[in-house]
Image (cartoon, rainbow, N blue to C red; front, side, top):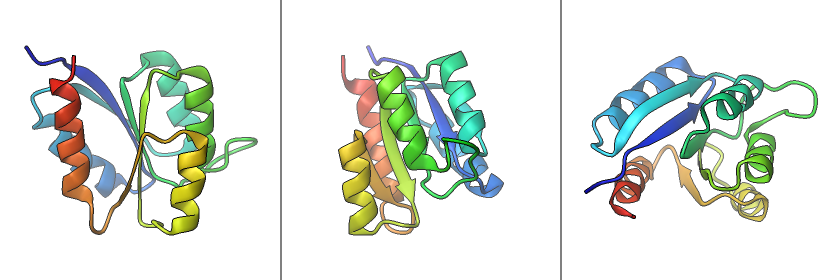
Length: 129
């Protein structure tokens, strides 16, 4: 039997969030998708819903000590270490990839070329016990 889980998507572009949410909803293992448009709302939603997976963009609006997706990643891994964090960005440079890896990202994907790999990874999570 497949495991079902909740996914949070954080991206400042509404069209990207909606498209990704629709694609995720097609995956049997995905029970629900929560959407956040900025770093602060993402952290509030993560604390409230405790999603199994968080898909985070790097370049999103932030406030105070939480300025971008990497700050969200650090907070999530510090406060919700069981949450799988997947970085999905147009800024897939080696510098960002390394920084996200050091901060605890479980996976890192380039929006422009690795979208299908992201969806495959999410579906794969549903088959794990």
